[in-house]
Amino acid sequence: MGTELTPLDAAVNLHMAGRLDAAGAAYRRLLADDPAQPTALHLLGVVAAQAGDGPTAVRRLTRARLLAPGSAAVLAHLAGALRLAGRVEAAPPILRAALVLDPAQGDAADSLGAVLHTLADHAGAYGWLTRAHRLRPDRAETVVNLGTVLRDARHFPQAESCFAAVLRVRPDHAEAHLALAVSRLVQGDLERGFAELEWRWKRFAAPRWDGTPLEGRRILLHTEQGFGDSIQFARYAPLVAARGGRVLLEVHPHLTRLFDGLWPGVTVVRHGDPLPEHDTHCPLMSLPAAFGTTLDRMPPADAYLRADPAEVARWSGRLPVGPGLRVGLVWAGNPRHVNDHNRSLPVSRLAPLLSVPGIRFLSLQTGEARAALPAGVTDLIDGVRDFADTAAILAGLDLLVTVDTAVAHVAGALGRPCWLLLPYAPDWRWLLDRTDSPWYRSLRLFRQDRPGDWDTAMESVAAALRAMAARQEATRGNGR
Image 1 (cartoon, one colour):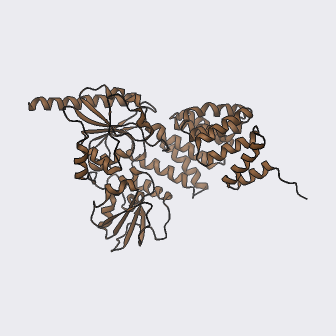
Image 2 (cartoon, rainbow, N blue to C red):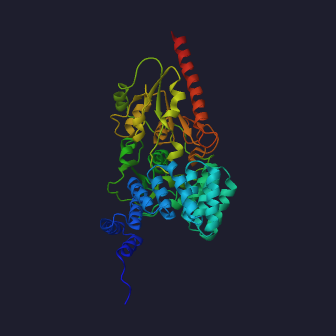
Image 3 (cartoon, one colour):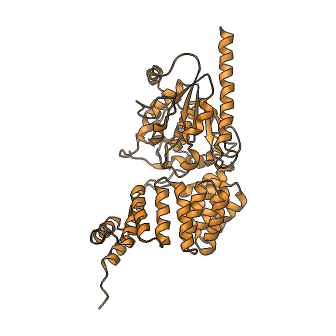
């Protein structure tokens, strides 16, 4: 006769089979009988993390740590939960403690490297990922992470050697292909970069379009990532129509009013609604590859969206009147974005801008960061329903100053002046070192000189803003 499973073993088997709800219920039953059962509490915290509930995972794993202070695994999972909960800065000391307890724990070394990368400590990240690679030389994900750190530190040949090493052994490793895509794109090698980026597209029943003439066929252009990506690549929709297609453009409901009726031959479809019949499809981010986009062969960078005149008139009544530039501010993006820790900035970093005289600052900040509205800044977000309202507001501003989030794409697509604040390792589309964007003619880029150095970037923005305000004041003086 076989040995009967203990209740804990049975719960672990459910967990390993991916049945999170059933495993969670089994762990809770164990804890009802013994609230100090450390393994059940530990694994119940892991279940919460796997379900995406960071705060609950942190609470459970913090208690499990008290019950099992010598467990390196509990500490490693607690650090992961802290990252999930947006508390990235708290994770490194937890992971270092785990590695003191178990210096051979590859997961903890890998995680510490990833956390330090998130915090823009490239040297520290490289050191710990190198150690993780020595501990587990066959783990492809560690090599991809090493390459990603090298890429973001701008050591591109070494980074691409890491990705190539993975792809020699596993040619279908999608993450290595996508990391290589970003490396090529950020250096301006759009043709090879967009080719690698094709590893991420999702399949539909209809065949995917490859750029050939459509001859009246119906093509679905579908959204797949964030608002900014949809706004940036929607510019290709009229080009697809020009190749003979009847275009269905599927976008998030927050974008439907902004896009609706802009281009002949393009019908806007709300994401989530039943999809109309179509003959072929193409993800929006695959359109640059279909059109053979390179830095020398790009769609026009001029405005391709427009604000609704009725909405512009409605919002103009809420904008301040009188002397002074009207400058919009956005200092934080979506906190769930993978790179948000680097691209967003604390509101306190806006101080050099807010001290510039002759400016009326207006906040377009959304989400949790909106609660930190600085004194003297007018909040415009009440009443904003979607990006059509955002476009109408931008039409009435002299300038937008923003971190890398969707509103920058709206400004660029409208042709409105926008100063974009970028981290040292930027998103690929902003390339490296240049102050302009080939995607949007109206954008001016301000970059960190070193990882995490917002102060220098903000002083540059403040100096440019003072010069802009002085020019406007001189113009007013000459007109009197």
